[in-house]
Image (cartoon, rainbow, N blue to C red; front, side):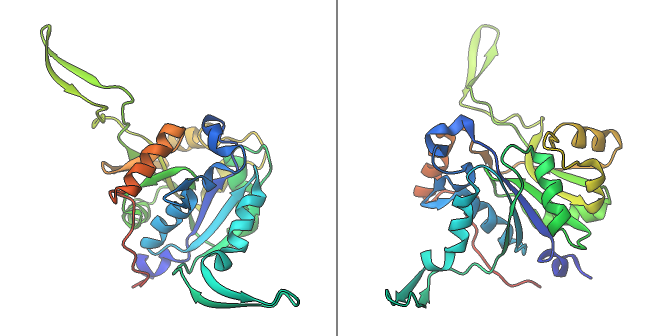
Length: 274
């Protein structure tokens, strides 16, 4: 079976259950993945990015304010269509549909206070099925990385895990000196020789041996540390766009990119799978 043919069957686990305490202005009434960018939840943008590369099966790992995400997808067709409703019988007829999403979405409640590793373990127990590989990402990061290339890299290198590596952006300007003279001032440079976790993973199902459904299991701690110690974690390097929405300032930056029609992650979609 070709990699392309397998893509649509790979389940994408998206971590949607955190409290989002660093962006409290937005998360008082909704979970962080539902914070809008360009009038759509950032979660929608993440899912569209995956779909560009052929992935369409999503398992959303819910926790904090799970009902908000459930309501959004339960009413997705109504929210994005013209419809008629008989107010007496409540019979509803959809007319023009103003979306092209063909996603398969599973909404899995994984606990109010569960950590990232626990959420994956709980949801995978129920919904991984017989898939040999699966993806994991957070509900707050955007990238223009070629996720199909990362998946191919993952399969070709035969390790249990692959993580997208991105260059860390600086939150401060950098002054380059020649003696005491300022030679160059760089506004928020990227560190091209360093890599951080970009939050887009592919795993073999063997990864489940490293996880626990105990609520305090944090993916980024013991599971990934052990995986690296076992030399079973590869880095897929991406030097293009990546941004994480941690704060209101981050959200404003993403909104500005979208409104200026300069959003690098915005996919030109083609749903054909070869």
